Amino acid sequence: MKSKYFKAYELVSNEDYEKMGDAKVWEIFDSGIIEAIDTIKEHFPHGTITINNWYWGGDRNWSGLRTPHSPDYSLTSMHSYGKAVDAVFSQYTAEEVRSFIVSNQRMFSKIKGIETDINWLHIDSRSREDLKLFKH
Image 1: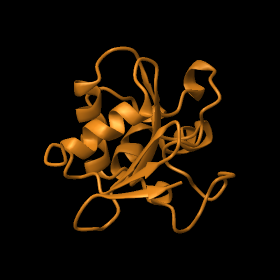
Image 2: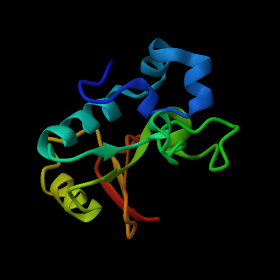
Image 3: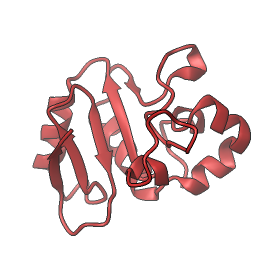
Image 4: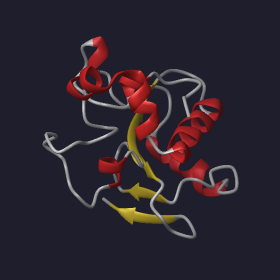
């Protein structure tokens, strides 16, 4: 599933994008996470939502997929399976977005985990029945 609003290179590192290209990135990423980030963009349309920004010369390279050469790689992380993203917003706080997701769980049924007490939004689609909030 392709995103309506995000490009494949926003979801993977520079090195991984060069190896994979667009088609493989869309194969790897969980469709629930793609659906969730698109829905978030639709409800928070102003400004930017940044996952990775290396493509434009930014320093965010590992906020989507984390492969073994990532300094933040963990075998147990949902990032390692294309089931998580970390995002920052130019016009909204992470807490505003988290609160909206928690208050509208039906709309975000694919999101199963959200980290709290951090200044970015972490969402994931880990295998659970209901939404879990957990500290970073």
